[in-house]
Length: 307
Image (cartoon, rainbow, N blue to C red; front, side, top):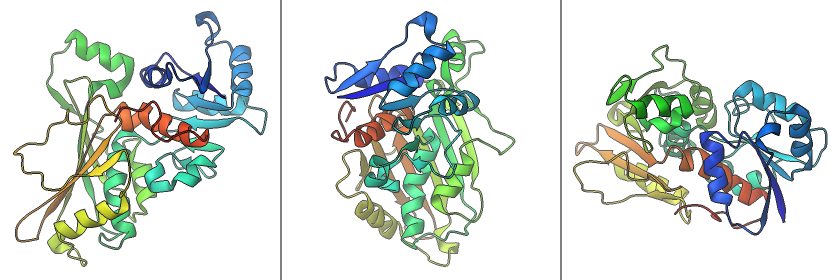
């Protein structure tokens, strides 16, 4: 039996992880009483008693939690931004980083939700040589408001101020950009334009490409086929072929831990759009953490996940 401690279990990501672990007899959870939840001594004990710790904390608190672990046995999955490009940490995207790398890791950084969609689309195609690493990529994305945590959830659900959609990160320095660049091996940081919609959960990540101007001039079919080969056999990542509906809805993967990938192209081959649909709290957060935890514990990769 694997002992798990979720530090920050009352936050949005932590609660969703606990839902995926509920009723699993191969998992033993350490759960601190409310009055001990922020007590350093109690947290230190729990962090060192666990086989695997999942950190659902702000960046600074996540770094502090890691420093409280004083043994060489406890393994860590960090859902914050703190370690996503840090040396010695394995990126918790098994389909891209490698399942064995995640399974054998002592320290795993959980990907960002937007980053998951971008990296899933771009990294395999750069690796295959179909997309140039030195291209100036752009990415447009929209998420449900649950990705913003409790404060944003309360704001949207209270309707103050009422809004259907908002764009943000106007300084062009969103916290996910470093991992998007690093994990795809890009020369330039992508220009990232995220937005929040007035719905609880769901996400669309869209990477437009001027394929006709690229030295590789990849066709939409070639891009799609390469993604299908890369993700062949994955239980969670699907490359959708023959999609002929007029609209792709943000809710497509809501409530699941799936990641659906699409490639659309102009008939003349000059432009393409790479699009990912996922749940910002599923494969974009809690589902990804549980997937990595399963691999690290030697359990079935999709145990407890919502397919």
